[in-house]
Image (cartoon, one colour):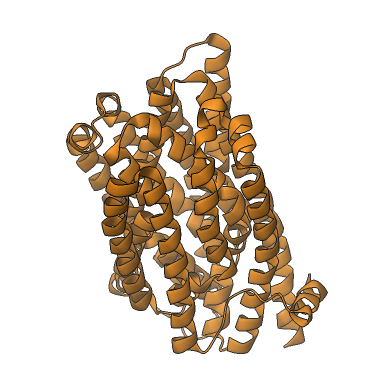
Length: 450
């Protein structure tokens, strides 16, 4: 037991360090990209880029058909049970489905994107980049799945590299080239984004292929366990619904802003939303490491150790999140001006409001992943649906009556509500708490493990 606990702690440290480095790089690269774009492009074009990125995120979630977390769970579970052949079959089945899903979503957006841009967002400029956005969606879908399969293997550095670090780095280099040549158009930016994503998919896909092929030569311990497409889909379809609803909760507010217009408001709100990343980064780092551990520990019946691990991780994540909140609240306007320019300082009140909901998110810990990785994806799906519907309906009313601030307040409240519901659902179904604890004993316990 001691040896196993030590192994878990070592993997949390090593994986957490890799995830931390990856997340720092993502933060810096995204800040660099946004910093450059805010100075290279007019606010209307920045708004178009944010809308394209937002549509890309949603399209990639739908294109993956909910398979990302299925990949993490079943690959980690198979390897934890010493069933490499099962893991190999999981990967083959998942990529076959994802290729179909990514192609369908890309083609669908290509056919409908112009209508969406004109009729919903009232932006001819956004309609002009429909083809590039559709291609970006298809490529990003495969890129994200490659990263999640690597995460299932506990290859956190590879998951970070092919989960956004590599393509973001290449995009930033390309934007730097645009700055030097003074060729500034949102079409060029999106073209380079597509190229960067394609290169990431080619390199990551090749490495994953070699890794998967090696599984064929690894011995299976015990009775071989099979996996079917039906088993994978049983987890994937609720995850598809969860992913869509979760997107509405975390990024659907930008759609609402785009709906009420104009695109300059999208630029302001989008800039604010990206700074929220500073609060959620500690939890994102944790969630880059703990899902495969949850799958393994729960399969092995180590429920008590699982609770201690998750609450410790939430506590460690909660302290820097609180510090980040204080910094953003105190320096909201100067920070926005420094990163994006003086035009974006007006977003300071929205930044403060959105930050509060995200702090509740971090302090709740990895409760959503715990539900998913233990087979309780249906309750997670129901919570996501209720929360997503609340955001859209409440946001439409609040946006019509109170503008951007109404949308921001609704978004923050829904994020907090969703996490509280998930926390209570985990306690009811598994008898486990995942939230942070700032008692002296808990902090000493956490620091003793660190």
